[in-house]
Length: 169
Image (tube, rainbow, N blue to C red; front, side):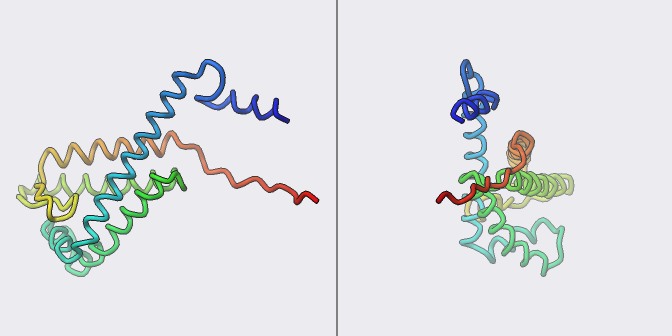
């Protein structure tokens, strides 16, 4: 049985003899996942602390009706916090990677349209206290974050159900 386990381990990327590049790859992937999760958690946490101000920041993009701005100001920070925690703790990583990619695609779209319309507004990316403006810096950050989320999504295999072991007795 131990030989079968060793054999299956050596077939996995980054595990087994001579797998130093694989371990580096796995380490880089872990750091990417942790960084992405940390950014999402931190951004969501900051937004939770200032809900009505964040609703104003969303309204400044002039993309949604007033009630939708309010709903987004409540829902979006929680989505970021939960997605960030899932990525940091390595739970449902593929689903969290998909959600992160969708979030950053939406952020990228909002910033792109604001730039295209010439809006000089605060982005609200890390709450309203950061005073970060919509601009090329925010656009580049969201593009890189989207690429990181896609990398996490595309390099994570499907979740496997836990193995059922018959009771010993």
